[in-house]
Amino acid sequence: MLPFLKLNGLSALYAISFLIQVQLMVNVYRIERITGLSNIAGYTDILIIIVFLFFSILCYFLTKHLFGRKKLKYIIPVLWMPYFWMFNSIFVSLYPITDPGEKPLPAIGIVIMGHYIFSTFVIILINIFSSLRSRE
Image 1 (cartoon, helix red, strand yellow):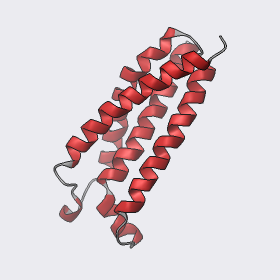
Image 2 (cartoon, helix red, strand yellow):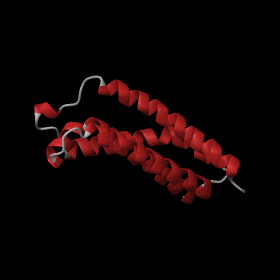
Image 3 (cartoon, rainbow, N blue to C red):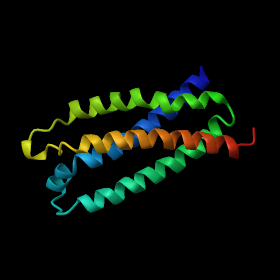
Image 4 (tube, helix red, strand yellow):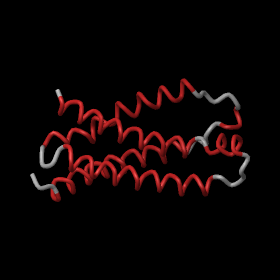
């Protein structure tokens, strides 16, 4: 039971990281309206990079500590996807877009799909590197 909880907890952490990055990309207009800052897009790009690096380092150390050389961790690149869709559905239902001017551009979906694929490969690389550097 404990490996199951570790696996799902780490997958949920990856999904939360991706959710934060996606919501920062999609909700630039909302963030501008709420904060009152203009040209917030540059700040959100920097924040997305910081979130990506922070969660990548955190997940690397957690993967290395929790799983070591166990092969169970190779399920994570697939298991984080349902968590992301669940968290995204919850976020969208809690904070719907009410102002039509805040709808994201149509091309943002392609960017999100590319980031989705990129994040999956990053998770695979984190799993491989954590296996190489673990002592078990």
